[in-house]
Amino acid sequence: MKKKTWRATLFSLAIGLLMLVSACGSTEKVNSGETDSKEKEKLRVVTDAAYAPMESMDGDKIVGFDVDIVDAVLKEAGYDYELVHVGWDPLFVELKSKRADIGISSITIDEDRKQTYDFSLPYFESINKILVPEDSNIQSGADLKGKTVAVQNGTTGQTVAEGILGKNNKDIKKFENNVLAIMELLKGGADAVVADNAVVEEYVKNNPNKKLKVVTDSSFPSEFYGMMLPKGSKIKEDLDKAIKKIVENGTYADTYKKVFGSEPNLQELEK
Ligand code: ARG
Image 1 (cartoon, protein in one colour):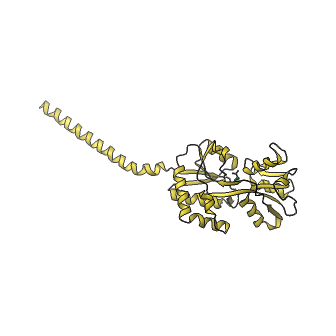
Image 2 (cartoon, rainbow, N blue to C red):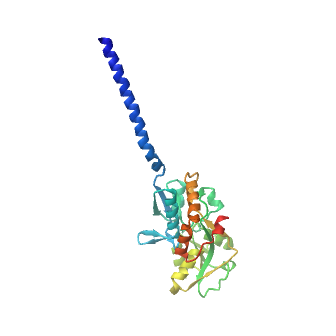
Image 3 (cartoon, helix red, strand yellow):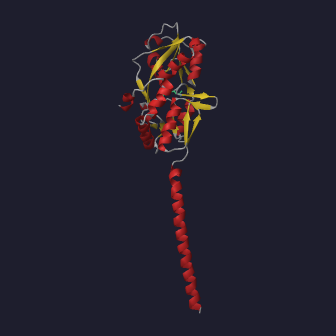
């Protein structure tokens, strides 16, 4: 009698164990479905939305070419995300400390930044241009010598201006964002602004009453924008694949036409 009870206990224990194991198994299955979307955690995308038509605030909405591109890329890659206007300097801080996952902000891919950050494939070609009053006698980069130049701090516009006027030259006035640099020009505190072509051209087009013009110096280097990522980011491959895809399927060209009214030069990007 005692033996029988012992056996029964063992038997129910075994059954119990079996049930537990199979329950665990099924939990795992339910979870594995979720693991996929959990790996693809909601991304934090940061920008400095004071650079129209690339990224700017429209009320409390962030709009612009970069906004449309990052949206198309992340949809294609299957990521959920939030886009946040944090400003230019904070953007670098957040990506360095890996608090943010992607910076999209007309960010030029350059050797210096590559030391600290990773970049997606290039998605846009750009060059610095000079914004001056309509009656200015500045006709080239060299003419900036001896003038006061306003730039956004920490941009390639600053690098270009420093290349002409020299580093630490007090005649280079550095601002937290490009809107402030343009305001300095408008109030007569600077003779010129150096910034990306799309941005200065857009400004002149949209503000004819400000009587400004754009000066091109083709000796300025051609630049490419990339999405900036924390070093070692695991999403780079997904982003690159998605960038290629939206170029191939025409989404990129459609977005480009919508914002700039012309066809993009895709060959330059593919190089
Ligand atoms: N392309 C330049 C750079 O990377 C300027 C970018 C400024 N972007 C902005 N959203 N303010 O340095």
